[in-house]
Image 1 (cartoon, rainbow, N blue to C red):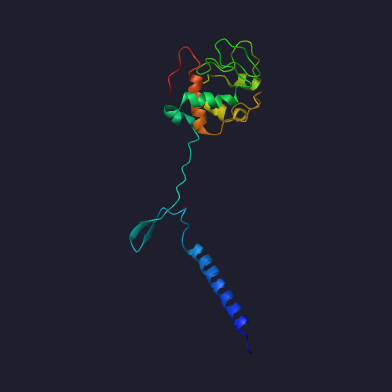
Image 2 (cartoon, rainbow, N blue to C red; image 1 turned 135 degrees about the horizontal axis):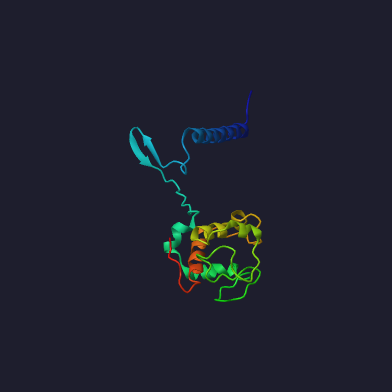
Amino acid sequence: MHFSFLEKFGASILIVMWLVWGSHTIGNFVSPEPAKANAIKIAGVATTTTAKVEKKEPQDALVLLAKADPKKGKKTFGKCKACHTTDKGGKHRVGPNLWNVVGNKMATGSGYSYSNALKGKGGEWTYKNLDAFLKSPRRFAKGTKMTFAGVRKATERADLLVFLRTLSDSPKPLP
């Protein structure tokens, strides 16, 4: 058979592309991905790869309280202003007034009708309980009237906790 120049050229390009694709595919199976490998030993010599290290934020805001900023917490509280007030002796809105909430007993503020789910929890609004509630109110107290989904970022919750701490004549010590 006699092939023209264009047919030979096209076939050679196709073969080169298959070789590149095949070597790439085989290489992915043989060597680890750089993002997963931190160090690889080659012939007894340790070499480090350029792995992208993902810095995960802690899920517990309590470990971040020492570095938390009440000014940022006040800004984050903007999400809560539609339903809550923070003034000493302030009126309740859709949600209760949050003055002196840190360290106070749960569901005990006068003049507000708390949900049975929150009344049934008992205990105090410790930093741990407030963190869990702010993260996911519905998970903390199944059946709560609070419709807010929660504050996902631990740094924002820590800032918010430190801000709530300031809403008192005698703020509770940090854990």
